[in-house]
Amino acid sequence: MPNVFFKKIDYETLLKNPEEVLKGLEASGIADDFKKDQFTGLKIHFGEKGNKSYINPNFLLPLAKFLKKRQTRPFLFETNTLYHGQRMNTISHINLAYNHGFGKLDLPIIIGDGIKGDDYLEVKIGKKHFSSCYLAYSLKDINYLLVLSHLTGHMLTGFGAAVKNLGMGCAARRGKLAQHCQVTPFINDKRCVACGLCKAICPAMAIEKGEAACFIVKDKCIGCAQCISVCPTGALDVVWSQDCNLLGEKMAEYAYALTKKVKCSYVNFCLYITRECDCLNKEEKGFIKDIGMLFSRDPVAIDKASLDLVLRQENKDMFLEAHPKIEYLHHLQYASDIGLGSLDYKLIEI
Ligand code: SF4
Ligand code: SF4
Image (cartoon, rainbow, N blue to C red; front, side):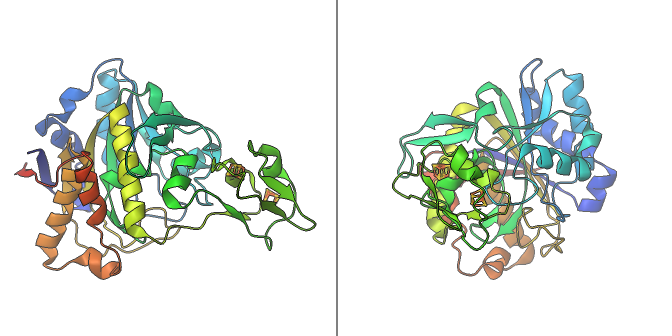
């Protein structure tokens, strides 16, 4: 049964004592994994522009110093988004990371799926939904990822933490598209100005120019998602998945693909827990009292333990109340079924 280590702490106390992150990594034994000269990524979400609840970079200052001292070649790792926003390409994404204070960590920032999110690494898994997954290309050279996740509610999966950070957060845009919908984007002809940029980049020649707008020939589209990032007007969009269980299963398969490729450990920050995730482009109030931090080598166990701690503290199912139509445990159950991790765990308070 995997261990999950738990440090009870609130946001303000952690802000004053950020060395508690490092202490938790040491107490859980995870700090022993950090090795000299291996490429060590800190998988992080910088928060969309306007968001305030993302993991505070001040929490990570002692950890960043420690990793540098150990000469682990540390860096911050993230991927570009599928949706339109500041994190849709590497340049505005890194600018946003700096605006959100991550520059103070003095670590390089790698956006692993290339400038426009098109660079992918194919990993074969042979599972129910995917025979291959398309992860961020840089993962091919990364030795170790410490996956730092902020526990939040989520409008499509009910909640998000480590499994979501792995599965969706480390996929290239093509992989995100495959998880979210039936692969073909569409062009909103009210927003399209027929500039032809998408047509020029499409590797499958699946985009045609109409009189006033371009359109996609569905039979030709291979779902690579390259067109989405070049559109200057936001006319290219996807049909976001309405089947939350299906999305959750696909996300779990992507998380599984990543763990086959890169060794990972996990820290969940159950602090400033919001109804929606950090992709929301506005400030949100927390809706659950701070719980603390969890540390584990098992992504399913750490997420299940985080949820159980919320349930125990609040005495009611806050995530179900926030998103009543979503069976939020479904993706964890499926993740466990395919061998990503364990729903059972041993909780060790530190
Ligand atoms: S997703 Fe790829 S193949 Fe499909 S229209 Fe866009 S660029 Fe072309
Ligand atoms: S890039 Fe956007 S605006 Fe230009 S033709 Fe394609 S969909 Fe229309």
